[in-house]
Every structure is written in structure tokens, then in C-alpha cells.
Image 1 (cartoon, one colour):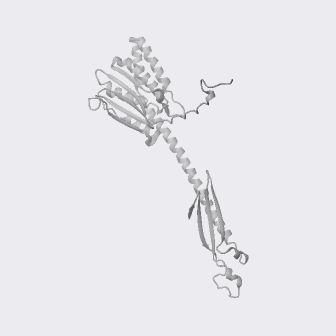
Image 2: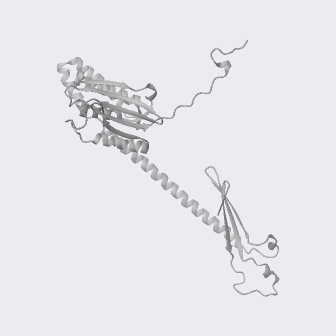
Image 3: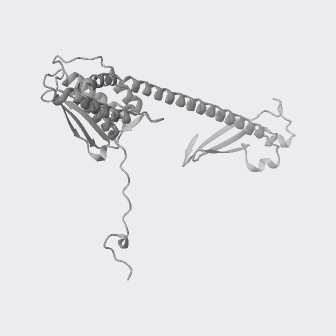
Length: 325
């Protein structure tokens, strides 16, 4: 086998069947002196775009002029048929493997979407029931606040409507959903809940799994601010570093090991699993202590490719450029 520039060449020397049946020909048989004992096969593979070309040459392993005196006896026709059968068998096997691989990939994709949908359903917040119960109480005691709470709930649900065949949202959409969620909690917590958002407009189109930002905010409030007597602040920050976008949710609440509820960990476990199913190894999640107190959780996802810059305008088309006389 010899690699050539842009192709691969295979040479073989095949012993042909003995036309004399093992008996030595008579020394008076002059044609027997030109008997060919081997054939040679030359196959050249030419890779192409989506296709492969194969050139096959089968001929006696002898000088060209021998064909004038000795018959081929069909041995090279048999060699060509054998090569054709072998190639057909390999092509059929390759096609079967490709079909099986495509079916496995389709099944894996369907399972991945199903698992993502299941995980998203699991992280759907239980506060919806609490909000309706609170609104029912406020409708009797404080109708204006009840109306305000229902308005924020409608806004929240508007951003929570599922979209067919789309498991990804954007950072901007998730931020709007989270704002509506926080406004509902602010009615209940009052001045104990403060919010600071630092998300550049250029990053609001970054794809992000649905409900992921809200999961981090829910954890910050449930385990950090609600157990703290005076409440505190939640920060939502986003920044780009090379080919990654980091989204951080931080709080100045109770932090780790300060009497806060430890929770079940299902929310963060689902978050990690959704990151893995969506991005593979290209995304990461970390959670650390905030300074001087509280917790900071960061999700890093691949940054979208920057759009190509438009070509420069010719001088006559630029503002202030020369026009026709």
C-alpha cells in the first residue's frame, strides 16, 4: 500500500491457477515457455467531496508483448469480479453502519430533548401556587397590591410560555422573566429584597437554557436572603471573556454554614445536567462564597460568534463623499 498525493494506491501480486494441472509441459511446447504464473492488481483510490473513486487495473505479471503469444484464460476477469464483490460488500457494510449511526443519533437527540424537557418541568417553581394564594388573601385585605401581584404574575407567565422545538432561550428573555418573578417576591418581602442588574445589551442575545437564571435567583433568595432577618441584595452580572460568557448571580445573605436551609440540591443538580446535555464540556458551573458574606454562583456558556463586519463603503457612497457634478 503506497500513499500518493491526494490518493491511496494498493498493489498486489496474485498467483494464477495452473493451466497444466501440475504436469510439466512438453519441452517441445514453445508457447509453454511464455506461460504466466502470476497476475498483478493495481487499485488507486481517489477521495472526493462526499464520494470516492476507485481505478482498478488487472493484468498478467509479465512483459506486455507476452499477450501476443499467451492467452489470459479469464483469470484477470475473475480478479476484477472478486474486487468488485469485495468493494460492494464493504460499501454495503459502510452504508448499514451509517444508517445505524444516524438512527442512534436521532434516538439520542430525541432522548436528550425529552430529558431536557423533563428537567425544565422539574425546575418549574412552586411559587406559582403560593402567588395565587397570596393574591387571594390580598384581594380581601389589600386589593391594589393583589392587582399589582397578579399583573406581575401575568408578565411572568407571558415569558414562560413554552416554544416548540426550542429548548434555548436568551439571556435577555430570561432576565425579563426573572424581573417579573422578583417583582412578585418584592410585594411579599418589601424592602428586604433589593436587586442590582449589570448585563450589557450586547450580551442579551446570548443563548441560555430556559429557567436557568431564575433557578440561581431562587436559590439566592431561598437560602440566602429569606433566612436573613434584614434581607439583602441580589446581583445579576454578565461579562464576556474570550469565547465564554459568564453569568453570575450573587447575594449578601447567610452564605454557607450560617444556619441557612441546605435544601435538597435538586435545582443545582438539574442545572448541571441541563448544561451537560446542552453544551457538553463547553459550559461550566461554579458556586463559591461571596465577600464579605453570601454566595456567588456562575454559569459559563459558549459565546456566540461575532457577526462579520460589513465591507467598507466606496468613497463616493460615504457621507460627505464626492458626488456627480
